[in-house]
Amino acid sequence: MSYYVYALIDPTNGNKPFYIGKGIDNRLKSHFREALSSGKTYIENEDENIEIDIGIIAENEMEEYKNQQAESLKIKKLRELFNYGYDYDNIARILAKDLDEPIAFALESFLIKTIYGFEDLTNKVEGEHSERFRPYNNWECIVGFDLPSALNRSMSKNRMEKLQFMLAEKLDQPLLRIEKAFPFLIFENPNVIDSGELGIQADIRGTRIKVFTRRTNIQIELRGRKNEQHAWIRSHFKKLGAEHLLRNDHVFLPNKWKGSKNMTSDVQVAIKRIDFLLEIVNAENRQQLSAEALQLLD
Image: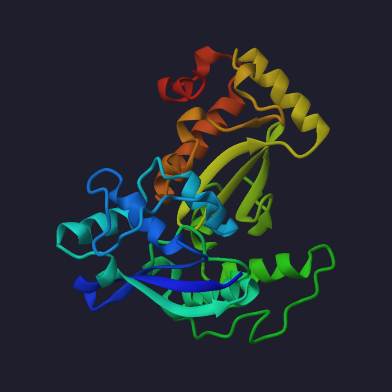
């Protein structure tokens, strides 16, 4: 099966790419189908009816596809260009064709991470094995890439590479600013945690607070690590009449903060959210909670 790597370009901005992807068959055209779904129902100069087929969407793009209820920047940009009179022939460009899948994955990641820069694109994910490529416009010596890295036997090579490149991209900076705001908490150093996010964690009273980033977004939750922490948070939330808000794995993430659209990129907002969780953890009863903290237990 033959793969290709493509770009969506902006004719109003010197044909600068705003999205890079890989695909097979009609994957490239399916973006236009998505963007046209609320308005026009056809693509200029196209005879075929283009449907969105989950099977042609790359695995590393599934997060983006599943979150289409929050209209993506890519779709907004396409609709903006449609309004200016541009269509498929003006926007879609194949960058490489007749590729096998591993090469397509590598080329897509290289273009996103090193050539065009993730922050300057509307992609929601960097691509497969993006940790193997230098961050865009970063010419400093990078530990683990230009310089040897210290051996860490507790971490796999891929996980170590991912950590080194997250640090090279300075994704730890908002975490360090948050840590500085809470000198009485002993946070571990930024590390790759759970499903691959960069995060910091600290014990608070009988449980543990976790702060992690997904690119520019920050999320905060209570997540115990030990059995006694799981038991404490169950007991504490039962006392506050909020045991039903805990997940089966004893994690507390307020409903108001769930989902990518409810995460925050503002460090001050993240600090305030931590204040609310500290308030909840330290309260002996609901009467001690502020109105804002109580809302998180509704």
